[in-house]
Length: 172
Image (cartoon, rainbow, N blue to C red; front, side, top):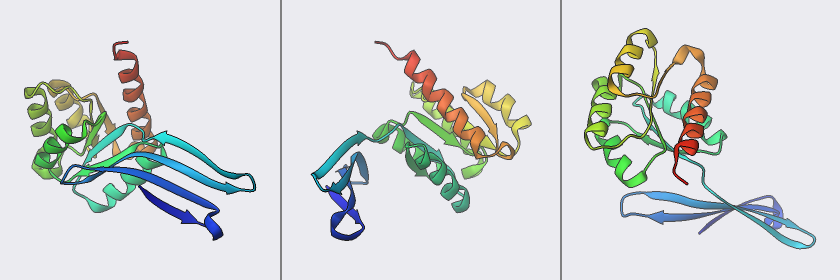
């Protein structure tokens, strides 16, 4: 467990519980620790849904990390299709967001390989060229195509819709 403090005399802290699989750390839960006159109040909440982003541009990765984490979702990133495929097995993301042209046209390869393995994780294409990519997406099993020009709110809304659909589609 890692405890991060803010303010004097531990007036506020964040505790994170990690797991390590020999390759990377994953946050299992977080707790907000608030100091007050009556002692410590602890609120534990599991991390939100895991969102895997396949993107090779550092500025776009940073912007997407901010967006995803601001919603309480876990942000994970892969620079290449091969990294993304490895991460899907270890991570089990609820949604994959991919820039279709990263890693030399990686969206097509990623979709093909995921579907070939029998994995139906929703894949969202976040693209500069929605007209071209929409037809491609329909043919290869992507869940949605979001134009970058529509802004981050459009991507956030699409992720939220897919997550809501996943919740209602799960067996009881």
